[in-house]
Amino acid sequence: MPEGKCRLCGVLGKLTYEHVPPKVTFNKETRFKIIGFMEYIKEKHPLDKIFKAKIEQGGIGYYSLCQSCNNFLGTTYVPAYQRYSNSFIDCAKKKDFNAFELTIHDFTALKVLKQIISMFFSLNDEIFSENNRDLAEFVLDPSSQDLSNRYRVFNYINTEGQLRNIPLMASGSLTTGNLYWEQS
Image (cartoon, rainbow, N blue to C red; front, top):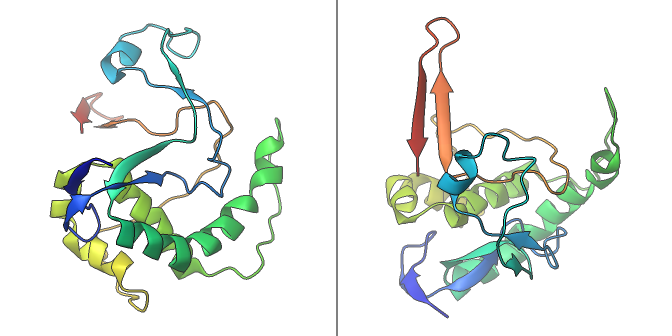
């Protein structure tokens, strides 16, 4: 196991492999290719191109958490997130739909939210962790309901094979036509 600083608690030590999303939410046998972001973005039609890269297996994830934090998430938040995410499976399988109805049993929104936020810590680098310690404390305290107003979380359904995470953020103005890129 590699060593580094745990993205949640900040302790230096051995890092475990954190599946993002959790392994029990259909991320156990995921096959994927790792392609350089700049190589991808420079393509005129990147969704149509077949990139050459080694096929990785075993689910997408990152060496980002210490064993203690990984276990904490797995027992405290992942079961609620699993029930939540699995509720979307039938909807995601549909090719064409304008509306759908969804029923989630035993929904614990706070636990789901904290699991989602924890994944952002694994996806991002140490700078994200250092700049968002209040967010890490929110996740690490199961009883905390104090999420700062500076954070907003959105949800969308994504079918298999689509882009899931990109280390780039863009914002722009439809009025001026200005576009701003930020690479993490």
